[in-house]
View 1 (cartoon, rainbow, N blue to C red):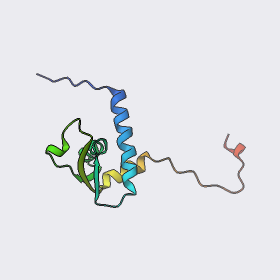
View 2 (view 1 turned 120 degrees about the vertical axis):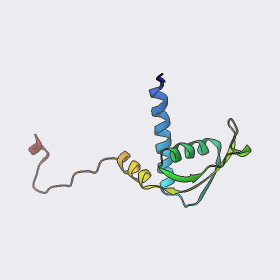
View 3 (view 1 turned 90 degrees about the vertical axis):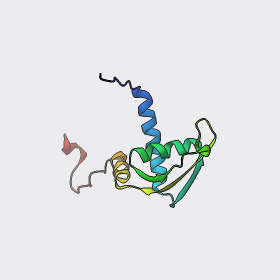
View 4 (view 1 turned 180 degrees about the vertical axis):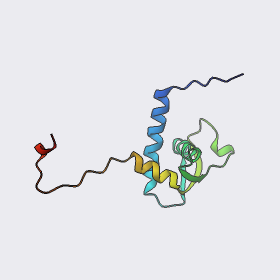
Length: 106
């Protein structure tokens, strides 16, 4: 019997955008980084599952659902995480060419 998985695309897109923003914040962090805010620990879990970061998120009483605090340690970005950030960045601008006018492009 096949299982049918239902996805809420809007919810998934928001989660991905939030995780990408958190990944961008981690890009300039000093590692190892201790994370204690529960919502940030959730972001660490998502990014670790996506193999974008290396991190430790212990299971136990401190990391229970619906708590305000948690604990995780981020050790760094993976190659995949760096690729994701590069791909999500703005495209590079084309080089300027001397002697061309913008009207020449049409």
